[in-house]
Length: 318
Image (cartoon, rainbow, N blue to C red; front, side, top):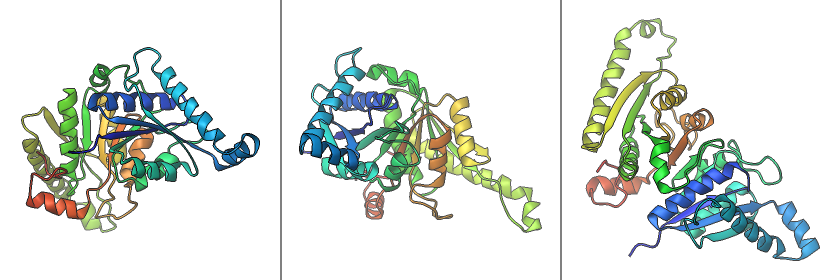
């Protein structure tokens, strides 16, 4: 029997984290998951508290603050998870969040892209970025100024459509499979997107060959069509755009009213680059949408999935 799934929601008591907590708790309620609400105290604060109030006092008081924050966040409705688990740890926020995800066997981390800039810090570019670079579990990043759900039934009204930017690498089918599962649960359509970047070359001959762009579009459309076919009979559209990927993704998410973007955290095998992927980073900075960031599927798991389509975390579209 599989253990009960776990949703980890790190907060820093900022207003931005209320939205993340609402999403995290609502998801945990729907899947009957354990909800872990955590915060990370600064080591200097912990040392000062230990000297003035004794060891363990700060952790005890912080857990009370977490419980109060949770109840205040859901003051307008019954608590979605009656008895969440509260965790207060000390150290580097990103490292402690990652360690806590491992200790709790978290299946999903839900966190805001930004938070307070005071003693407790959780803003994109530091904590959230580090978590995304190192995570081995999916991370749902919520916008700091976004509208959050009061109930599970509100989520489809906020999302409307799921945008899935694909780079047409081996990870694309896995992203589409995850998007299909979410779309099925929420009853919303999917838009698959591939952005063809402008061809940059110092060779004059390549700059003057318009047939190259046409060929790249044709190949992308053909590949997207095969993904759409594997997602049938769900409502799926596909689109090929030209331009800078993060800008096009943010623009299309706005124009097509896509409230959720499902992206991979792998780096391009062609360009190399950081583990997180530069396009995902820029989308998180500019899109102001919910972003579900998916870590790479381990190579051995990918191989087993190709051999046996019944593997639980199959990277092919079911």
